[in-house]
Length: 458
Image (cartoon, rainbow, N blue to C red; front, side, top):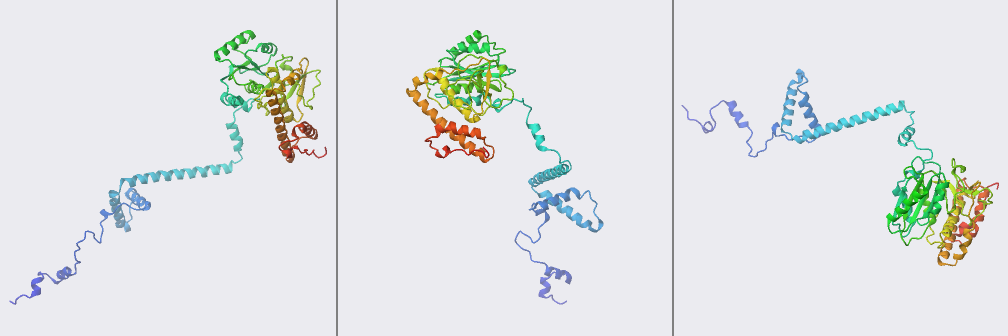
């Protein structure tokens, strides 16, 4: 027997094939990572597409019978998807659920848009603007105005012209019933001079908006005065046509007649009002005033009065009948009283209000002549007695400056209207030139003192 060689001692006894397999086996690596990564170690997919595909395979692979040629591949995909979903984070499932819900919402929204677009193309003759107006705007009375939509708090902004501010204001302390209609007489009186108001309550059969001004330190004292006045005048507070508003002024506040008239007008219960500047008795009835269809201010005069609206008058205290929401409100800028006499203060402030109305209407104010109404012309004649006082001088200068500024604005307004082809006629422009000429001499705005061009053909 021959001895074995060195090679025979190093290689185990086996056939040559086993020996070759052993020699060609790849070396063992010491690192933990392998060139082949098992499916169990694969993390969650990095894209929504892979995630959606794996979930779809999981849910639908069991319901679809695989074809024989690719049965092996389907089984492999099923196993792969099972391993992927078994090791995936639960947050991925929630994310997929949210994404799927949003996809459904977007699809439904696009479908609705397409549906309504197609329906509108077929039935697009519907006037959507008319439909919205019908739905949004409720039915309102014919005489409804913007003043009716203002709350009492918003209307009280009118008190800002009083300095110092009033101590208290109680609108509609005695309120008229909601069914009242007609023409409201707007008057104001002091709490210690309510005697003349009684004649209005007795002789004026229409509504009355009365502002009572008081400087009493206690509001309870004013309430007692109003209660006594209501009993004396026979006012039934349960079904009254009288609206009484209480204004408690600061002791240092002067009377501003135009501001008081504006408050009485603002809280009047009807759409047509009669502004009464003086304290004379009513010598007409509301039925004689054509309040229906009224659009411009109208003077109320007696039948034999020669007053003409085409000429400026400072010596009248005639009432003015106008719509409550008219654009012109009596100016309240005269904080300095013209006189210590209440009647003179009323007349001086009312003269400025008439000036506004004349300029606004371009001498086109209406006139209603009643059988027995009269105007007081003797009161302003005594105004010269207080002309040299400090209050009289301040008031006169304020009045002149006010008229000058009002004329400048009126002329500029007519220039704009003429450029737009909607200016006044020749008669109105001539009246404006004549009325403003005394107040535009030496005006700061010299360009406004030029003559307005008359309309063509005048």
